[in-house]
Length: 518
Image (cartoon, rainbow, N blue to C red; front, side):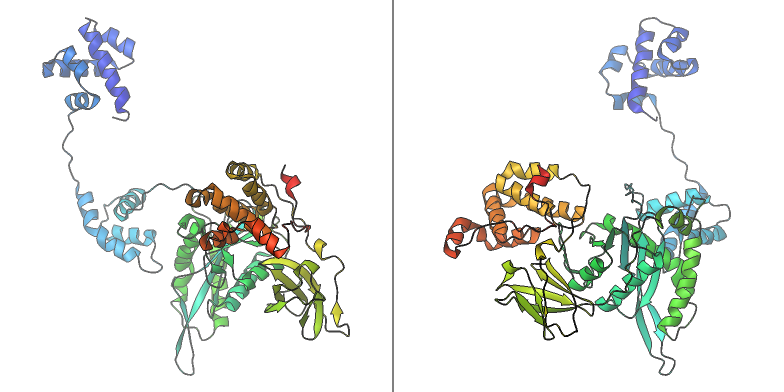
């Protein structure tokens, strides 16, 4: 029965009224059970030769067994035919480019009187163990671009030597419209990877709020559950196009489910067609990929009356941020120590750095147009690259070099959770939230920091936050390093007395300050 608890209750009602001497008409009207059904229950009750007291002492399970005699199941020939074919069909389905529609067509050829398509899929999915329910993750318009490489490669053949060269296939998909971009590149090295990302942005004609890569070495230097360390070049690429990088979490397949689904579709809509031809160059291969990609994006989505391209044109195209006017110019890196005069040198030109970094080691990133200086992965100065007569390039106000980024997050939860540990932790969390980062990235860092109290206790976390604050560094990584090295056992006050320095918050424009979160 569809609802066993209600059914058993109804049967008990029927039998109680019968035991009280009521007729079937009265019982039917009182319980809402059809009169013929009442008669069926009463007949079974009489045939069972049991009393109403025995009925009352039975559990629902026992009562169900007594009143519902299951008829033996008859296995039809259709079931037996399909069961015999399922192992073979599943093996075929795992081949590149083979779809369930193709497998069903093969099944019908062998069993013309077989199941209809929907019933076939139910049995196929059950056999493959794919019928687990999963929550659909909604995607905001213009928010995320998911990127990855396909697990399978394509090939280019050198016509002169006959040598076959494997090439990587890059896939990008917008979360909302699902408009897909595909291109073949020589490798997964960061130069090829970044060029593929740039081509994807120009294909879409705009920039999303966030780029979500898998944990590729070209994108992520060190993966983490709460906050990953980005590859410097890819981070610079994202900054050039005014977007954020928010890597998928390790062992969290739902973070990248959309792009992995796109990869499977690409195998069918593009790879199967590419496999039918031999290509002698990467350019020739990409020409055909774009041709088949257009067909893919123009195909109506399953169960919808619109395509990916139509959905993009209607919803997402106008929401994307504008592209940078200039192509991304890869940046060189250089470690430097800020001189006593507050300058660092690049090609016999000297660029000023905020005075508080004098004597400290910093990281420089530069190209033909600009020079950027970083300390502990935080941007501290930006200059226009100079090739002229001026040897000294000075910025009068480095502390105002960053702009505030208006966000709409609500950080009260993290501040409140941190306050339960201690005031020092709450103050540190406020400064983490004040970083000029994508809100979700700040939230993840805060969650990781606060979660450390379960592993090390309140006191150690409080001391770690005080020490990190004395370094003017506000991220999950510094807290993790302090706790792992047990540097939190050294009182900050003792070290400050020895060094003669105090703990002060840098007054950067990109730091909102504690008063902002009061």
